[in-house]
Length: 88
Image (cartoon, rainbow, N blue to C red):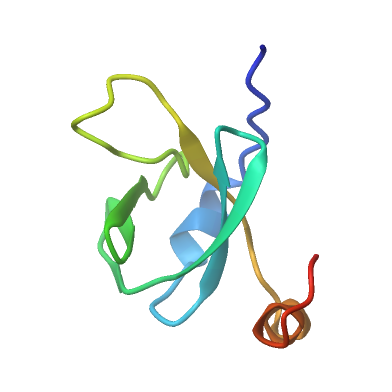
């Protein structure tokens, strides 16, 4: 199965800040919503998950292949939908 990787623009990854909610595409196809807990010049952290601030790809030292990426930053409206148990 071919992986579908649709990255955000580099500027969008660099605008992500603590408190944002991102959509992690697990296996490049399954959405998972995570809160951003820390950012630096090179990484975005969401609890136990770490992503490249340049590519949005997950950084996992235990898995030698890319398994997920940040596909979008949720808007306030999308966050409210998720919080109330809805689906995007």
